[in-house]
Length: 80
Picture (cartoon, rainbow, N blue to C red):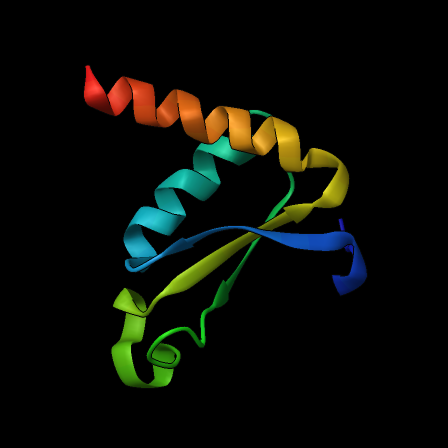
């Protein structure tokens, strides 16, 4: 599936690439198309930090609300 950047919005920022990968997998298992990219906020990309570089998860505009609801579900599970 290839989507133009104009159809993608930032869902969340993660300081850890590993955590971003875990969340990305959860969203994809629930039918959400997710793209991960190096974040330029606040430090730069993977050239400096490697796998632990800050990451952004992007989703399709039409999936944003569902993805946000799934993130809330993850947070609830983590607090129990």
